[in-house]
Length: 437
Image (cartoon, rainbow, N blue to C red; front, side, top):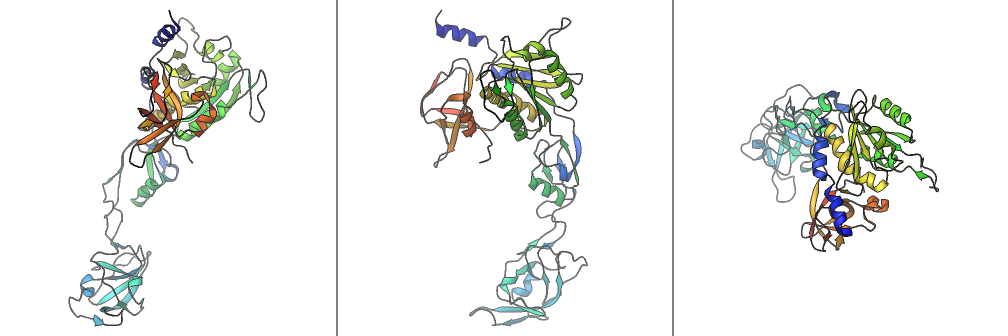
Protein backbone atom coordinates (compact mmCIF):
# COMPACT_ATOMS: atom_id res chain seq x y z
CA UNK A 1 0.00 0.00 0.00
CA UNK A 2 1.38 3.42 -0.92
CA UNK A 3 1.88 6.30 1.52
CA UNK A 4 -1.03 8.16 -0.10
CA UNK A 5 -3.28 5.13 0.28
CA UNK A 6 -2.21 4.79 3.93
CA UNK A 7 -3.10 8.44 4.55
CA UNK A 8 -6.48 8.09 2.88
CA UNK A 9 -7.23 4.93 4.88
CA UNK A 10 -6.35 6.73 8.12
CA UNK A 11 -8.51 9.72 7.16
CA UNK A 12 -11.45 7.42 6.48
CA UNK A 13 -11.31 6.27 10.13
CA UNK A 14 -11.81 9.83 11.37
CA UNK A 15 -15.20 11.26 12.34
CA UNK A 16 -16.40 13.98 9.93
CA UNK A 17 -16.34 17.36 11.63
CA UNK A 18 -20.00 18.14 10.87
CA UNK A 19 -21.13 14.84 12.42
CA UNK A 20 -19.01 15.40 15.51
CA UNK A 21 -20.23 18.97 16.04
CA UNK A 22 -23.84 17.89 15.63
CA UNK A 23 -23.47 15.14 18.23
CA UNK A 24 -21.84 17.54 20.73
CA UNK A 25 -24.12 20.55 20.30
CA UNK A 26 -27.26 18.40 20.59
CA UNK A 27 -26.18 17.59 24.16
CA UNK A 28 -26.06 21.24 25.23
CA UNK A 29 -28.92 23.44 26.36
CA UNK A 30 -29.11 27.20 26.83
CA UNK A 31 -28.69 28.35 30.41
CA UNK A 32 -31.89 29.06 32.42
CA UNK A 33 -33.25 32.59 31.91
CA UNK A 34 -32.58 35.38 34.36
CA UNK A 35 -34.49 38.62 35.01
CA UNK A 36 -31.97 41.46 34.98
CA UNK A 37 -32.10 45.17 35.60
CA UNK A 38 -31.70 47.03 32.32
CA UNK A 39 -28.34 48.48 33.39
CA UNK A 40 -26.94 44.94 33.73
CA UNK A 41 -28.44 43.48 30.56
CA UNK A 42 -25.87 44.72 28.03
CA UNK A 43 -24.01 41.89 26.27
CA UNK A 44 -26.52 39.21 27.24
CA UNK A 45 -28.94 37.44 24.92
CA UNK A 46 -32.69 37.92 25.27
CA UNK A 47 -34.52 34.82 26.46
CA UNK A 48 -37.91 36.04 25.27
CA UNK A 49 -39.40 38.54 22.85
CA UNK A 50 -39.63 42.13 24.11
CA UNK A 51 -42.67 44.27 23.27
CA UNK A 52 -42.95 48.03 23.86
CA UNK A 53 -45.32 48.70 26.78
CA UNK A 54 -45.51 52.41 25.93
CA UNK A 55 -45.17 54.52 22.80
CA UNK A 56 -42.06 56.43 21.81
CA UNK A 57 -42.21 59.38 21.70
CA UNK A 58 -44.66 59.30 24.58
CA UNK A 59 -46.29 62.61 23.56
CA UNK A 60 -46.26 65.12 20.70
CA UNK A 61 -43.02 67.06 21.00
CA UNK A 62 -40.70 69.50 19.28
CA UNK A 63 -37.83 67.90 17.38
CA UNK A 64 -35.80 71.13 17.11
CA UNK A 65 -35.34 74.39 18.98
CA UNK A 66 -37.63 77.06 17.52
CA UNK A 67 -41.20 78.30 17.52
CA UNK A 68 -44.24 76.02 17.64
CA UNK A 69 -46.97 77.43 15.41
CA UNK A 70 -49.98 76.65 13.25
CA UNK A 71 -48.91 76.07 9.66
CA UNK A 72 -51.94 77.98 8.31
CA UNK A 73 -50.69 81.10 10.12
CA UNK A 74 -47.40 80.80 8.25
CA UNK A 75 -48.83 80.02 4.84
CA UNK A 76 -50.73 83.29 4.52
CA UNK A 77 -54.13 81.61 4.67
CA UNK A 78 -55.65 84.58 6.47
CA UNK A 79 -54.88 87.73 8.44
CA UNK A 80 -55.96 87.07 12.00
CA UNK A 81 -54.82 88.06 15.48
CA UNK A 82 -51.20 89.12 15.48
CA UNK A 83 -50.56 87.93 11.91
CA UNK A 84 -48.79 90.52 9.79
CA UNK A 85 -47.05 90.28 6.45
CA UNK A 86 -44.00 92.42 6.05
CA UNK A 87 -40.68 92.84 4.31
CA UNK A 88 -38.19 92.80 7.16
CA UNK A 89 -36.66 89.49 6.01
CA UNK A 90 -34.10 88.92 3.25
CA UNK A 91 -34.61 90.94 0.04
CA UNK A 92 -37.48 89.59 -2.04
CA UNK A 93 -38.89 87.49 0.81
CA UNK A 94 -42.22 87.77 2.60
CA UNK A 95 -42.00 87.53 6.38
CA UNK A 96 -44.66 86.52 8.85
CA UNK A 97 -44.92 88.06 12.30
CA UNK A 98 -46.41 86.08 15.19
CA UNK A 99 -46.92 86.91 18.85
CA UNK A 100 -44.80 84.79 21.22
CA UNK A 101 -47.15 83.92 24.09
CA UNK A 102 -44.85 81.70 26.16
CA UNK A 103 -41.81 79.47 26.45
CA UNK A 104 -41.86 75.66 26.69
CA UNK A 105 -38.92 73.50 27.79
CA UNK A 106 -38.44 69.75 28.06
CA UNK A 107 -39.67 69.88 31.68
CA UNK A 108 -42.92 71.73 30.84
CA UNK A 109 -46.02 69.72 31.66
CA UNK A 110 -49.06 71.98 31.72
CA UNK A 111 -51.12 71.64 28.51
CA UNK A 112 -51.36 74.89 26.52
CA UNK A 113 -53.21 75.78 23.34
CA UNK A 114 -52.26 77.96 20.41
CA UNK A 115 -54.60 80.69 19.27
CA UNK A 116 -54.55 82.06 15.71
CA UNK A 117 -51.59 84.35 15.05
CA UNK A 118 -49.59 83.19 18.09
CA UNK A 119 -46.71 80.80 18.75
CA UNK A 120 -44.65 79.36 21.60
CA UNK A 121 -40.88 79.39 21.88
CA UNK A 122 -39.95 75.72 22.34
CA UNK A 123 -36.84 73.68 23.09
CA UNK A 124 -36.19 70.33 21.43
CA UNK A 125 -38.06 67.68 23.42
CA UNK A 126 -40.68 70.09 24.77
CA UNK A 127 -44.34 69.03 24.55
CA UNK A 128 -46.16 70.67 21.66
CA UNK A 129 -48.98 73.09 22.33
CA UNK A 130 -52.42 71.90 21.30
CA UNK A 131 -53.14 72.86 17.66
CA UNK A 132 -49.44 73.28 16.79
CA UNK A 133 -48.44 71.37 13.65
CA UNK A 134 -45.05 72.89 12.77
CA UNK A 135 -41.89 74.08 14.53
CA UNK A 136 -39.95 76.85 12.82
CA UNK A 137 -36.19 76.51 13.48
CA UNK A 138 -34.60 79.39 15.38
CA UNK A 139 -32.26 80.19 12.51
CA UNK A 140 -35.22 80.87 10.18
CA UNK A 141 -36.39 83.73 12.42
CA UNK A 142 -35.19 86.96 14.01
CA UNK A 143 -35.29 85.11 17.37
CA UNK A 144 -37.77 87.60 18.84
CA UNK A 145 -39.04 87.21 22.40
CA UNK A 146 -42.40 89.04 22.52
CA UNK A 147 -42.98 88.73 18.79
CA UNK A 148 -41.01 86.89 16.15
CA UNK A 149 -40.52 87.45 12.44
CA UNK A 150 -40.32 84.28 10.38
CA UNK A 151 -38.35 84.47 7.15
CA UNK A 152 -38.96 80.96 5.78
CA UNK A 153 -42.06 78.80 5.86
CA UNK A 154 -41.35 75.14 6.57
CA UNK A 155 -43.56 72.32 5.36
CA UNK A 156 -46.46 71.29 7.53
CA UNK A 157 -45.21 68.87 10.22
CA UNK A 158 -41.60 70.09 10.09
CA UNK A 159 -39.84 69.87 13.46
CA UNK A 160 -42.67 67.85 15.01
CA UNK A 161 -42.50 64.34 16.49
CA UNK A 162 -45.89 62.79 17.08
CA UNK A 163 -46.63 60.39 19.93
CA UNK A 164 -45.83 56.82 18.88
CA UNK A 165 -44.42 58.01 15.56
CA UNK A 166 -41.28 55.88 15.92
CA UNK A 167 -42.45 53.03 18.15
CA UNK A 168 -46.15 52.61 18.90
CA UNK A 169 -47.10 50.69 22.05
CA UNK A 170 -47.18 46.96 21.28
CA UNK A 171 -44.28 47.10 18.80
CA UNK A 172 -41.98 44.06 18.85
CA UNK A 173 -38.68 45.64 19.89
CA UNK A 174 -36.45 42.56 19.77
CA UNK A 175 -36.82 38.81 19.42
CA UNK A 176 -35.48 36.14 21.72
CA UNK A 177 -31.88 35.35 20.80
CA UNK A 178 -30.96 39.01 20.14
CA UNK A 179 -27.85 40.45 21.79
CA UNK A 180 -28.62 43.41 24.03
CA UNK A 181 -26.62 46.30 22.54
CA UNK A 182 -26.25 49.83 23.94
CA UNK A 183 -28.73 51.12 21.34
CA UNK A 184 -31.22 48.41 22.30
CA UNK A 185 -30.84 49.39 25.95
CA UNK A 186 -31.83 52.94 24.91
CA UNK A 187 -34.88 51.65 23.02
CA UNK A 188 -36.01 49.58 26.00
CA UNK A 189 -35.56 52.47 28.41
CA UNK A 190 -37.36 54.95 26.13
CA UNK A 191 -40.43 52.70 25.90
CA UNK A 192 -40.66 52.24 29.69
CA UNK A 193 -38.83 48.92 30.19
CA UNK A 194 -36.73 48.56 33.35
CA UNK A 195 -36.06 44.80 33.37
CA UNK A 196 -35.53 42.18 30.67
CA UNK A 197 -35.32 38.38 30.76
CA UNK A 198 -31.98 37.21 29.36
CA UNK A 199 -29.74 34.18 29.18
CA UNK A 200 -26.85 34.78 31.58
CA UNK A 201 -23.34 35.00 30.15
CA UNK A 202 -21.79 31.54 30.48
CA UNK A 203 -19.08 31.18 33.12
CA UNK A 204 -16.13 29.54 31.39
CA UNK A 205 -13.12 28.17 33.27
CA UNK A 206 -9.88 27.51 31.35
CA UNK A 207 -7.26 25.01 32.55
CA UNK A 208 -3.89 24.25 30.93
CA UNK A 209 -2.36 20.83 31.71
CA UNK A 210 1.17 19.50 31.42
CA UNK A 211 4.29 19.00 33.56
CA UNK A 212 6.28 20.95 30.97
CA UNK A 213 4.27 24.17 31.31
CA UNK A 214 5.60 27.31 32.97
CA UNK A 215 3.82 30.63 33.39
CA UNK A 216 4.33 33.69 31.20
CA UNK A 217 7.02 36.27 31.78
CA UNK A 218 9.95 34.10 30.73
CA UNK A 219 11.22 32.35 27.63
CA UNK A 220 10.86 28.64 26.99
CA UNK A 221 13.79 26.39 27.86
CA UNK A 222 14.44 22.73 26.94
CA UNK A 223 11.90 20.74 28.92
CA UNK A 224 9.78 23.83 29.55
CA UNK A 225 7.01 25.42 27.49
CA UNK A 226 5.47 28.79 28.30
CA UNK A 227 1.72 28.45 28.83
CA UNK A 228 0.31 30.55 26.00
CA UNK A 229 -2.87 28.50 25.67
CA UNK A 230 -4.74 29.28 28.87
CA UNK A 231 -4.20 33.01 28.39
CA UNK A 232 -5.27 32.90 24.74
CA UNK A 233 -8.31 30.70 25.35
CA UNK A 234 -9.47 32.84 28.27
CA UNK A 235 -9.29 35.88 25.97
CA UNK A 236 -11.13 33.98 23.24
CA UNK A 237 -13.92 33.01 25.64
CA UNK A 238 -14.24 36.63 26.79
CA UNK A 239 -14.42 37.76 23.15
CA UNK A 240 -17.47 35.55 22.67
CA UNK A 241 -19.13 37.21 25.67
CA UNK A 242 -18.44 34.65 28.38
CA UNK A 243 -17.36 35.43 31.92
CA UNK A 244 -13.95 33.80 31.52
CA UNK A 245 -11.67 32.65 34.34
CA UNK A 246 -8.13 31.36 33.91
CA UNK A 247 -7.29 28.77 36.55
CA UNK A 248 -3.73 28.37 35.33
CA UNK A 249 -1.51 25.33 35.03
CA UNK A 250 -2.32 21.84 36.33
CA UNK A 251 0.48 19.26 36.42
CA UNK A 252 -0.02 15.78 35.00
CA UNK A 253 -1.18 14.47 38.35
CA UNK A 254 -4.33 12.29 38.19
CA UNK A 255 -5.67 13.17 41.64
CA UNK A 256 -4.75 16.82 41.24
CA UNK A 257 -6.59 17.02 37.89
CA UNK A 258 -9.69 15.28 39.25
CA UNK A 259 -9.78 17.54 42.31
CA UNK A 260 -9.26 20.70 40.29
CA UNK A 261 -12.07 19.89 37.87
CA UNK A 262 -14.43 18.97 40.72
CA UNK A 263 -13.70 22.31 42.42
CA UNK A 264 -14.33 24.28 39.23
CA UNK A 265 -17.76 22.75 38.65
CA UNK A 266 -19.03 24.97 41.48
CA UNK A 267 -18.44 28.14 39.46
CA UNK A 268 -18.46 27.01 35.83
CA UNK A 269 -21.06 26.53 33.13
CA UNK A 270 -18.32 25.20 30.82
CA UNK A 271 -14.78 24.00 31.47
CA UNK A 272 -12.11 24.12 28.76
CA UNK A 273 -8.91 22.13 29.13
CA UNK A 274 -5.93 22.32 26.82
CA UNK A 275 -3.27 19.64 26.43
CA UNK A 276 -3.24 15.89 26.97
CA UNK A 277 -5.84 14.92 24.35
CA UNK A 278 -3.56 12.57 22.39
CA UNK A 279 -2.69 8.92 22.97
CA UNK A 280 0.93 9.35 24.06
CA UNK A 281 2.33 8.32 27.44
CA UNK A 282 2.13 11.87 28.79
CA UNK A 283 -1.45 12.61 27.70
CA UNK A 284 -2.93 12.53 31.19
CA UNK A 285 -6.20 14.35 30.48
CA UNK A 286 -7.37 11.74 28.01
CA UNK A 287 -6.18 8.88 30.22
CA UNK A 288 -7.97 10.17 33.33
CA UNK A 289 -11.23 11.54 31.89
CA UNK A 290 -11.88 8.66 29.48
CA UNK A 291 -11.09 5.89 32.00
CA UNK A 292 -13.84 3.32 32.40
CA UNK A 293 -15.03 2.80 35.96
CA UNK A 294 -17.45 0.12 37.11
CA UNK A 295 -17.98 -1.01 33.55
CA UNK A 296 -19.15 2.46 32.53
CA UNK A 297 -17.46 4.75 30.04
CA UNK A 298 -15.53 7.71 31.37
CA UNK A 299 -17.22 11.10 31.71
CA UNK A 300 -15.44 12.50 28.63
CA UNK A 301 -15.27 10.87 25.19
CA UNK A 302 -12.22 11.62 23.03
CA UNK A 303 -12.75 11.47 19.30
CA UNK A 304 -10.40 11.56 16.33
CA UNK A 305 -12.03 14.18 14.17
CA UNK A 306 -11.29 14.95 10.50
CA UNK A 307 -9.91 18.37 11.47
CA UNK A 308 -6.67 20.11 10.58
CA UNK A 309 -4.86 21.22 12.65
CA UNK A 310 -5.46 18.95 15.64
CA UNK A 311 -7.63 15.87 15.25
CA UNK A 312 -8.11 14.79 18.89
CA UNK A 313 -10.98 16.54 20.69
CA UNK A 314 -12.79 15.65 23.90
CA UNK A 315 -16.28 16.40 25.14
CA UNK A 316 -18.34 15.24 28.09
CA UNK A 317 -19.42 16.31 31.56
CA UNK A 318 -17.74 16.33 34.97
CA UNK A 319 -18.95 16.55 38.55
CA UNK A 320 -22.30 15.93 40.17
CA UNK A 321 -23.72 18.95 38.34
CA UNK A 322 -22.59 17.41 35.02
CA UNK A 323 -20.83 20.57 33.86
CA UNK A 324 -19.85 20.34 30.17
CA UNK A 325 -16.13 20.09 29.48
CA UNK A 326 -14.34 20.66 26.17
CA UNK A 327 -10.83 19.23 25.84
CA UNK A 328 -8.58 20.89 23.25
CA UNK A 329 -5.08 19.97 22.01
CA UNK A 330 -1.96 21.42 23.60
CA UNK A 331 -0.37 22.86 20.46
CA UNK A 332 -1.32 26.57 20.52
CA UNK A 333 -2.47 26.84 16.90
CA UNK A 334 -4.51 23.65 17.16
CA UNK A 335 -5.98 24.83 20.48
CA UNK A 336 -7.17 28.12 19.01
CA UNK A 337 -8.62 26.43 15.93
CA UNK A 338 -10.28 23.86 18.19
CA UNK A 339 -11.79 26.68 20.20
CA UNK A 340 -13.25 28.25 17.04
CA UNK A 341 -14.64 24.94 15.84
CA UNK A 342 -15.99 23.47 19.10
CA UNK A 343 -15.78 25.73 22.17
CA UNK A 344 -17.06 28.91 20.57
CA UNK A 345 -20.31 27.33 19.27
CA UNK A 346 -20.77 25.66 22.67
CA UNK A 347 -20.51 29.01 24.49
CA UNK A 348 -22.94 30.65 22.06
CA UNK A 349 -25.41 27.81 22.51
CA UNK A 350 -25.23 28.07 26.32
CA UNK A 351 -25.79 31.83 25.99
CA UNK A 352 -28.84 31.29 23.77
CA UNK A 353 -27.18 33.22 20.93
CA UNK A 354 -28.11 32.64 17.31
CA UNK A 355 -26.41 31.78 15.08
CA UNK A 356 -23.83 29.80 17.03
CA UNK A 357 -21.26 29.87 14.21
CA UNK A 358 -19.33 32.80 12.82
CA UNK A 359 -20.60 34.43 9.61
CA UNK A 360 -18.91 33.28 6.42
CA UNK A 361 -18.45 34.55 2.88
CA UNK A 362 -17.38 33.07 -0.41
CA UNK A 363 -14.11 34.60 -1.61
CA UNK A 364 -11.80 34.34 -4.62
CA UNK A 365 -8.46 32.76 -3.77
CA UNK A 366 -5.42 34.86 -4.66
CA UNK A 367 -2.87 32.03 -4.79
CA UNK A 368 -2.81 28.27 -5.38
CA UNK A 369 -2.65 26.15 -2.22
CA UNK A 370 -2.64 22.50 -1.20
CA UNK A 371 -4.48 20.87 1.69
CA UNK A 372 -4.27 17.46 3.41
CA UNK A 373 -6.85 15.08 1.96
CA UNK A 374 -9.54 13.69 4.24
CA UNK A 375 -9.31 16.58 6.71
CA UNK A 376 -11.29 19.82 6.96
CA UNK A 377 -8.62 22.51 7.17
CA UNK A 378 -9.01 25.90 8.82
CA UNK A 379 -6.23 28.17 7.57
CA UNK A 380 -5.53 31.76 8.73
CA UNK A 381 -6.11 34.25 5.92
CA UNK A 382 -6.73 37.88 5.12
CA UNK A 383 -10.07 38.58 3.46
CA UNK A 384 -10.87 41.86 1.70
CA UNK A 385 -13.85 43.33 -0.13
CA UNK A 386 -13.45 44.03 -3.84
CA UNK A 387 -14.45 47.37 -5.33
CA UNK A 388 -16.80 45.73 -7.78
CA UNK A 389 -18.37 43.56 -5.09
CA UNK A 390 -17.47 40.22 -3.56
CA UNK A 391 -14.37 39.22 -1.61
CA UNK A 392 -10.80 38.07 -2.14
CA UNK A 393 -8.81 35.93 0.30
CA UNK A 394 -5.04 35.71 0.76
CA UNK A 395 -3.69 32.73 2.76
CA UNK A 396 -1.15 33.82 5.36
CA UNK A 397 2.28 32.24 5.33
CA UNK A 398 3.05 29.35 7.64
CA UNK A 399 -0.33 27.64 7.60
CA UNK A 400 -2.58 27.05 10.61
CA UNK A 401 0.16 26.22 13.11
CA UNK A 402 1.76 29.67 13.12
CA UNK A 403 0.65 31.95 15.94
CA UNK A 404 1.79 35.00 13.98
CA UNK A 405 -0.56 34.02 11.14
CA UNK A 406 -3.48 33.61 13.52
CA UNK A 407 -2.70 36.98 15.09
CA UNK A 408 -2.75 38.72 11.69
CA UNK A 409 -5.78 36.89 10.27
CA UNK A 410 -9.20 38.46 9.89
CA UNK A 411 -10.63 35.23 8.49
CA UNK A 412 -10.24 31.45 8.52
CA UNK A 413 -10.27 29.82 5.11
CA UNK A 414 -12.16 26.51 5.19
CA UNK A 415 -11.03 23.73 2.87
CA UNK A 416 -13.22 20.62 2.83
CA UNK A 417 -12.19 17.01 3.35
CA UNK A 418 -12.13 16.31 -0.39
CA UNK A 419 -9.99 19.34 -1.25
CA UNK A 420 -6.33 18.54 -1.81
CA UNK A 421 -5.57 21.61 -3.93
CA UNK A 422 -7.31 24.90 -4.67
CA UNK A 423 -6.19 26.98 -7.65
CA UNK A 424 -5.78 30.75 -7.67
CA UNK A 425 -9.06 32.29 -8.82
CA UNK A 426 -11.22 29.52 -7.38
CA UNK A 427 -13.85 30.28 -4.76
CA UNK A 428 -13.52 29.11 -1.14
CA UNK A 429 -15.44 29.57 2.12
CA UNK A 430 -14.03 31.99 4.71
CA UNK A 431 -15.15 32.43 8.31
CA UNK A 432 -15.01 36.10 9.30
CA UNK A 433 -13.19 36.87 12.54
CA UNK A 434 -14.53 39.87 14.47
CA UNK A 435 -11.14 41.34 15.31
CA UNK A 436 -11.01 44.85 16.72
CA UNK A 437 -8.52 46.75 14.60
